[in-house]
Length: 479
Image 1 (cartoon, one colour):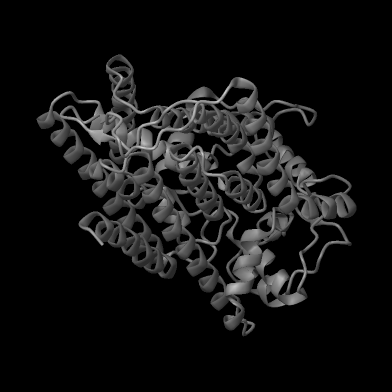
Image 2: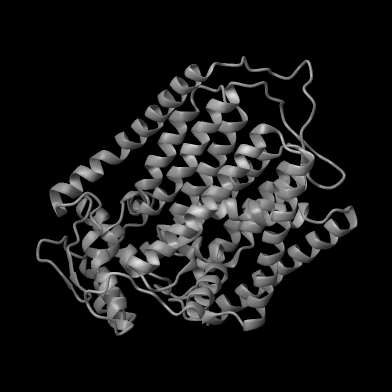
């Protein structure tokens, strides 16, 4: 293993260690929806089946709902979690995360909810470390000869405070993060090797598993469609292998060499058939995984998601809180609140969205975000002007940009139609594209080596400062 490989091992090990420590010091149940996720896990362990939860209003479940285990309910009540926060609304979510927690914590199933809670948090720690590893592989697949970028992406993710908080709490968001990172890696691999026949099967598998984790994975479908289109296009032209970093820090295409694999050009009808075949394979595999759950929901709830009633209750909570008429279809929060709470909660807001960092750290996060995005725009323009990217790299970056836009658009739509809580974590299905854009902008925006080093150092220092502030805030909460 080379030095870059050992560096990735170190980043993943840091994620594991930090997650285990935070899992121990974060107060019990002090994370969004953690009590309800714990109920879902306990129900699966206790009754050996997927739970049913009919949410009637913010305080009531239907009589045909699965019983909530008494030890867990007593544990919640002892920590003052009652009414809505003790409802099993997360039992309506796709079941994969809760089922995985229930399975992996079976050796700890001694009837103690506190032990179960910590065991489930350790499952999240493991999933968080796998997310960082997948991010590292996605970055290395995009640009295998630019080690600063390939290490910068997983490092940025590991130091991202809000992601770090998710790795240490019981939440299916961490399963969503892993699904998004796994797809980002699979997208890059599918476009770097467009003739590889098994990639559509993998894309379908990851999509199906992701949808069984959280419905937010629906936002990845346009990006997967673009990947399949890119494979059809790239298979019809010669392709260079790999890329290299030039003196300006951009990803430069290497010339075709005799050892490079040239793909036989295909006529358009042949490529169209290939595109259709791969789309059917991808969609078929995903559908085969998700269909049993959808059919079960249709039978139990009368609609395929199982979450429609829960979403209606959440919508009613925010129309009431904002003093809107009950029949209001669109929730429009004040623009200032939307921008501030969405941004801050995407970076670092802990507990039940009540534990903020000191304000200067959000200004630091804002400067870091601005530097990354503006640098990415400058870098993209330079690459287009100088033709510095291989065709496959161009397609991968286009897919990541589409994924980032889809995540933001989905978040806005969900906020306006359902949930006015303004939680930036709802965009984290695109964590890897966000990190690629930010790290690529910091490393590729400046046009001189000295400026790049200064920007990279400042960005790393900012992330370390945010991480230290997060440790301090988490430590405060644990006292």
